[in-house]
Amino acid sequence: MKKKVVVGLSGGVDSSVAAWLLKESGYEVTGLFMKNWHDTTGLLQGECHWEDDIMFAEMVARKLQIPFHSVDLSGPYRKRVVDYMFSEYEKGRTPNPDVLCNREIKFDSFAEEAKKLGGDFVATGHYCRKESISEGDVTIYRLLAGKDINKDQSYFLCQVSQEQLAYALFPVGGLTKPEVRAIAEKLGLATAHRKDSQGICFVGKVHLPTFLQQKLKAKKGPVVEIPPSFDHAEWHMGCMDDNVDENELIEASEPYNFSKSYGRIIGEHNGAHFYTMGQRKGINIGGYREPLFVIGTDIEKNILYVGEGQSHPGLYRKGLFIRDDEIHWIRKDLEMQQNEVRDYEVRIRYRQPLQKARLYRKSKGLYIVFNKLQRSIAPGQFAAWYSGDELIGSGVIER
Image (cartoon, rainbow, N blue to C red; front, top):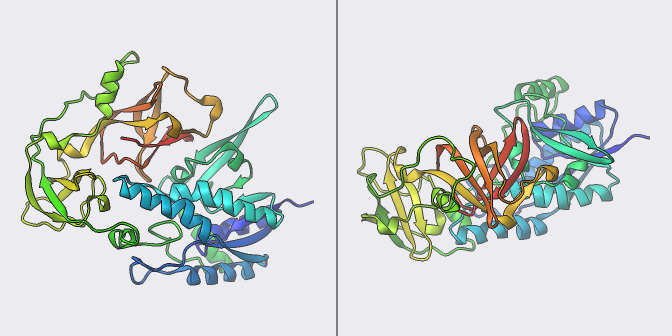
């Protein structure tokens, strides 16, 4: 009897080819489109909304001669992804909705709908791979980077669990994007040359301040320029040793306290919670040889700190900290124990090249100290650590 796979047909080329590959492999394939967002507040003009996506998804299903269904998951999406976004921005943190969408929606709420359709597996168009290994009677699932290093999307799945990976399939993970488009063109799929979606998962490309003002009020405050000569720690390059004092780890992961530095007010902003570390656009203050970048915020006092030029030392830090309750292990069998030290490669944002780092597990959480200074470490984002091309674990950056 054929195994049944429910493919999340998004109206894009990746999920379209994923459905065809599964059908060619002998699976019984059903397409399921999920509608997660209706509101157009803050969306930039010219962006396609869900009406276009469902039309393309249905065209692909007809071409592939597979059953097609749709489901409205806008309720759980708003509650578990968008409301979380608003809450995090209000605290001055920078969440990653795409990571949350995979953990909370695609491999949770959507998976439940897939099971109602009789699905044994859920498949998506993600550029990543899954392998399984056995340890005794236990099957362990490995999440691996996609073959196409320019499109690898394993980072977006850094919060999924072993239970979620057990029923997940990633058919295009062993292909490159050009290979996927070539297959779609050969098959005559309507999505063959459709542009990749951008912006917030299932919402689209947004003007973030306008989008956030649905829930967060604008509040004028000062923009303070910090000179590059401000008092900051000079961290040596290369990892600290295994027996480093925890106070040094705290210092390495602590954001700069610009209130103790000499700075001057150079303008006004509409709310410090609308800005994130490393942001360039939206400061709207001219007269400088180099662009101004956000190097810090004080949410309580509503102060925005900026520095001139992308080499400003306020943009760079040596380490970060993840609270103990925010550490997530995809490979639970590889979980670090208290006071254990390991070397991994880490990324703190999508498409960032992997960075060599040393991880220190302490009673309060996990310290990650990088070999090289890192630009724009933002609380609320996810740090993910890899061993080779395998994603081992991740966590929400506390500071």
